Image: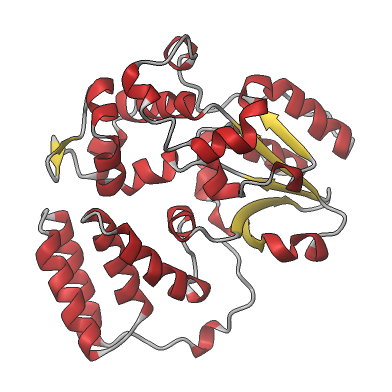
Length: 304
């Protein structure tokens, strides 16, 4: 992830005592004692102020359900964070987005999880003269750049802007069935444990929906994959030259081929079984999430 506006050499170094505090707090976080972890971080911050300590504090505050406090901290420190997380930008309501830029084709792609991002990033790899690498494309963070929406057109005046969207409930279904049920993502993230902070790492779909906000609070991977698209790409659809739909990836492929003059294959990576994600009417539990995704429906509902 690139942010070239910061002089990294001028960043203060965390003291050895601070490093020990971070290590101990992380161990306590993993041991499901967030209160003790937060106390250690607060004690360290009373001695020295450092981004690593404040960032860890914001994570602990999120886990404890104190998102407003975490947002204040992150809004202040993220401009100086080397590699801010997608979820961290989302929590602050930042008017900045991560983009994947096609090197030689005047294209800015705004990725959002569970919106065909693996496929589109691999297509951009092909446009850049590289190989399609399947889900390993997510292991290429150096290819992301941060852009400020307010200055984007001035900085990239001739670039086309692309975003892919999807019905939010279908995204939630895709995440649950593809990442939790099929790939055991939660269990893997906590070293094979059956539960973490009172939440099953192999919940039923109904259990996941019933405790959706708790799962977002405890597991950063859930938060990352279920953030509204508007948290990643903003709520102004007119900012984009192309708003594509996951349902019509062939149309997006054709758009990219026409834009670049390069014939692209239709790439379908990280697909979840269609029978599990295709909306055929929402359950009561799913309907309860629609309020959480109200901005997505308002901004991009025409493409769902």
